[in-house]
Image (cartoon, rainbow, N blue to C red; front, side):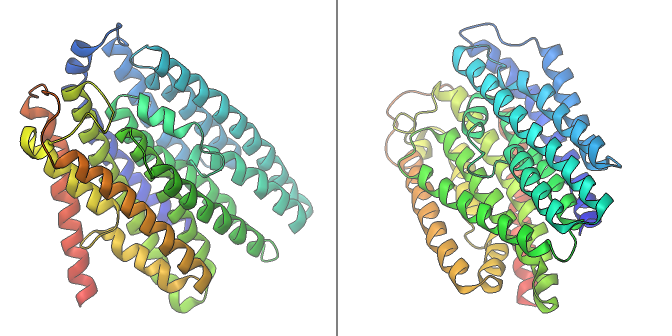
Amino acid sequence: MEHNLRNLLLILTPVLFAANLVQSFFYLPLASRHAKTPNMPDALYYTLFIAFFGAMIFALTAGSLPLMWVAIELTTLVSAPLIAYHRDKDGLEAMWKYLLICSIGIAFALFGTMLVLHSQTIGSPRWFMAGFAFVLAGYGTKTGLAPFHSWLPDAHSEAPAPVSALLSGALLNCSFFAIVRFREMAPAEAAPFCDNSMLALGIFSVAVGAVFMVRQNDFKRLLAYSSVEHIGLITILYSLCAGSADIRSMIVLALFAHIVAHSLTKTLLFQTAGNLLLAFGTRAVPVVQGLAVSMKGHALMWLVGIVFICAMPPSVLFFSELALVFSAPVWVSAVVLLLLFIVFAAMMKTALSMVMGRPLVKCERLPGSLALVPGALLAAIILLGIVSVYFVAR
């Protein structure tokens, strides 16, 4: 599992990096033109952006647990200034919140790493369970698992769109991979504790994401809480991989499919949200109305992206979540289905209110180049959905 997941992320992360790097070339000039305060210099932005990518690759390829810890900490240090790209009060507050909370989390992860290594030395499952609890809390902070997620909505909403997309689509996956590495080392006596802990945090994350999406009036924060929800679903899927051999292969495939589909779809949505922010100058849902009239192309990308992230067919997420429901215990399936219904209702209500109706304010006309990357991502996720339908039908 660990080896296959690493290989998947080593392919997915460069794809997401390239997509957001290209989008940055189109996005930053307009963001600078709309800025009320001087933005970060472009040279510094691209330096940190590339260093952020390098740190994530370092985390995925690190040969030891302490070295991986260094790499995860490095992702915090190089990505924090990117969150404050606009250099305004809210951006700086989000950056410091991110630094503070993730630094505490990474300290927990370091302590947990020490306990796990100690447990291997003396062969004690109890020490491993204690260490895994700290690891799950520590790396769970960077992964965005509730209740350690409080940095995520502010960081994702205040960062420029390409950074938000890379944080949600790539960083959360890398941090989740760190948890997987520890779980794969668990002795048989500690495995149930690890899986039950991940299952509990996964369900709680889906619940928190669902609750905070209801009546959410900031469309970038809506996407941020969607990331909390989906990382919860990914964690639930992984916790189920230790089940019977009959369903293990299906769950592993569903897990990998969910990671890829979520990353691509969320990148599409954050890039589209960034374009809407440039056009309207606000993230307020009540102001951004009538997209089907004023911005037809972006209305299509936004609505299809929301439909797919809500796991409606033919989204790949539909099949991964269906696998979760069929494989989980009945009570888990019932709770997850209820929460997913709340998520669907909240996100579709927001999306339809933004797309339908008449425009309330006049939006700025954006250059077509801003729609190139999200348009390509839209085509990719639709194609993946069609391919998944074909293979399931077979």
